[in-house]
Structures are given as structure tokens and as C-alpha cells.
Length: 254
Image (cartoon, rainbow, N blue to C red; front, top):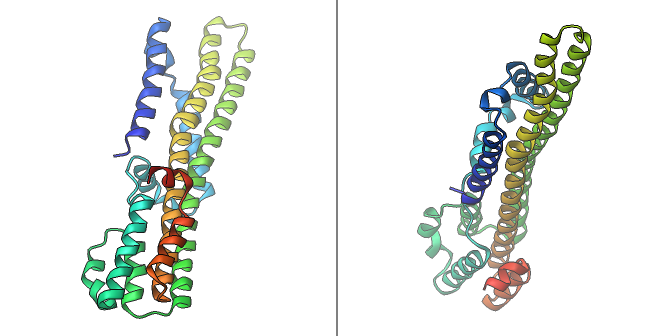
């Protein structure tokens, strides 16, 4: 469980609930069915129209990832692991890592090491892993853009609902009983759009983007390490080159 995502959403929504409670109007005043239909229904259908079915099926999985810990190890730990594999291969041959590779949890790292077990040449290792990385990046960016689009769309639907409510209000100025519901639609659609766009879609988009960057750095380090091992570079060179591409904040932690 990614505690920061959970803490952010729980904290932000708790403050919203507290503000409503302290406002004195009660929670019922902030519930409006037409506004819910406009914002959430409109956002859902616009998103369906923007993306392919195969991408929409991944929505729930992507949402869950925002609440999950990154599966890749910290950069210093990953570098040490690569160096350990390189040392084992130098001392005992490439087949000595075969069983250990099968126990790896990271599919990308496992595939990189499997290429070494198969005796794949360095240029082929790099080419195959780069292709895999490109496909992975494409999948990630599609999910990130989906939540980004949802955030923008919910805000736009909120504005559309506001205009609908204002038109209804102006058309019924002679009927005081109709002005209140129309004003509720006008105001609550803006509220729903802002909250859902910022405190749901916006948070998930940012967290997915952060996790994507972490995974991309990890994959790039894995590629470089696998290529250097396949090229039979010295342990010292491998360690020096991998440390050179490690993010500075990880260096400070080391």
C-alpha cells in the first residue's frame, strides 16, 4: 500500500467534509443528482469516447497501482544486485545464475537476466530490452493521459453544468421556487468538477507519473547492467557506469 496516496486523499477529503460540517448547511445541501449526472456521467462518456476498449479495461488496474508500492527495488539496491549477478557470472559462469533468475519478482529484470543465461550478444540484449521498454512506456503514458484527461474533462463538465444551471435560473426568475434548484446545479457542478478533477483524477495522474519515472530509471539501469555483463566488462567498470546514471538523491542516500 502506498501510504502517501492514501494519506493525501483521506486528508484532503476529510478537510472538505470538515468544512461542509462547519458550514452549518449539512451534507444534504451538497448532494444534487443533476450535478452528479452532468459531471460524473459526462466525464465517463467523454473518456469512453477518447480511448480504446483495451485501454479502458485497464482503468481499475491503473487506479489500483496508484495505491500500491513501486515493485522495483531502490536504485542502490538494484545496482548492488546487478553487480552481484555480474560477480557470480565472472566466477562461476552464466549458468550459475539460472535458478536465481527464476526467483526474481521484477519481470523486466528477470527477462534481462534470462537473455544473459541464453548467451545473447550485447547489441541484441540492448535492442530487445529497449523494445520492451518502449512498449511499457507506451502503456504507462496511455494510463497517465487517461487520468489527466479525466481531470480536465470533469472541470469542463463542471463548467457546462454551471452554465446549464444559470440558464435554468434566468429562465425561471419569475418563479422563486425554481431559482434555488437551478442555482444548486450551477454551483454544485463546479464544485464536483473541481473536487473530482483535483482530488481524484489529479492525484492518481501525478502518482502514476511518479511511479512511471521510477520504473523507467530502474529499467534503464537494468538494460545498461545487462549489456555490460553480456559484453564481459569488468566489475569495476560496471559499478562505475551504473553509479554514474543513478539519480543524485539516491547517491545522497547511499
